[in-house]
Image 1 (cartoon, rainbow, N blue to C red):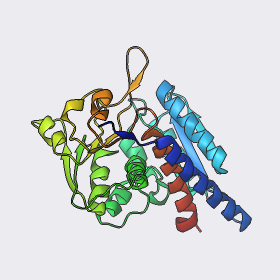
Image 2: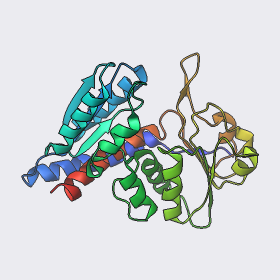
Image 3: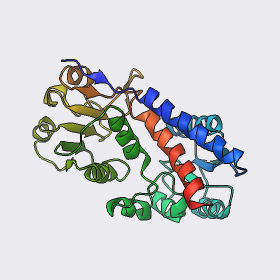
Length: 284
């Protein structure tokens, strides 16, 4: 068996086309385009590349975009003041503060300061709480993007055992809630989990999101299962690899995402979708 690839680039492109059409519809109705403010603090190379992709996506979709590039020595008070100003700006529907922040800044304080109706990353406790209460609104982007990938290939959920490797606030925990909403039986593994291979081998649907290259060995993968690799890790040679041993896993799985080109494009698409939703439903 050789797994079929889940093409995140193509699926994300279809979603972004629909978003662009939604923006055009707003403008034709005499409404302003959705507005997204992207805040980058410091000179982290990876963050800079990712932010540039988000800004290009905004431009292509017809959004109103504001770029706020701050120096690495920006103070907590200065960053908080910028968030407050963006919270009050009626042109802005979404605020994205790119993580990680420089070590002297408190990321939790900043994320809590973003108004929940402008939290298009879906990280605020209010939005995570809505997801937990089965009342999702602005959903965490990567888990929502994974659900869109799975839906695109017709993944069944009810009666399926979904295993998540990694319990982060950004992916693992909200991913579990998304899959519960779909009717899957969910297991979340983490650094204290014993016998990880046993859990992986029982997974009909595997989400690897630990940020550790090659953590999940291909031989552990259940034959015919669906494997979603969220990890993006760069080797010493500069190659991007995931958390799953791809070549071996592909010979066992039914469906699998590549790295890159799987989950990554979906995260940006969901960011745009959240911003359009905020403009249409929360700010008019």
